[in-house]
Length: 223
Image (cartoon, rainbow, N blue to C red; front, side):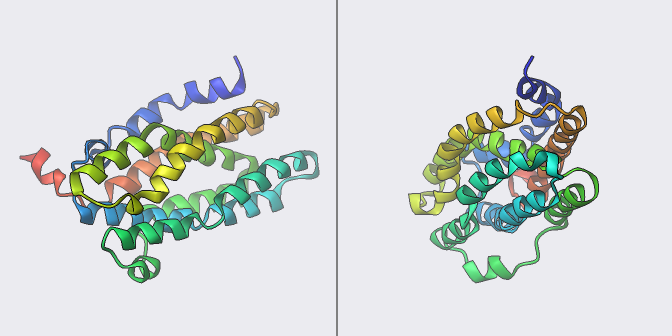
């Protein structure tokens, strides 16, 4: 079994846990309010704004023997630059305030997701950050386009309010192939274990990010 297939298998439980979060399952059906969508985008802005700094930090912490990963890191950086601004544009198109989102204090759950990754990169193993990459990109390929279509249709919003989700739904299909090729070149058992650990933990942490988003559907389901 390739390492990529091992990663998919080892993260199945955590991934399935994410996919049961009420905010996500309702979002996939378009059963969320405009306020919930904007709140989701606001938290997305804050963690996505760290993607390039994460990658830069990872690259700076790699030992000489793993510098070959720089090429992959650079390619990811070039793809990710400016995506947080797409999210702010989506917020404005959905009727929210770009500046309010930019200046908002992210929820504690979002701060924990961000802090966990910086800590792991700098204190434990920088290669482990590829687990976060896997979590984000595999999730996007599964839910981005379908969720965007459902929310757009139910709320009657312009497609301009979904540039982030649509772009990731399309981009991350090719990204996943590149990711698979990259991680299958990683043979160090400690690096492989680090990637699996970070992926498992970030699926859980991202689930918490979504659960913390105010959602009126919680009242409906609790009744």
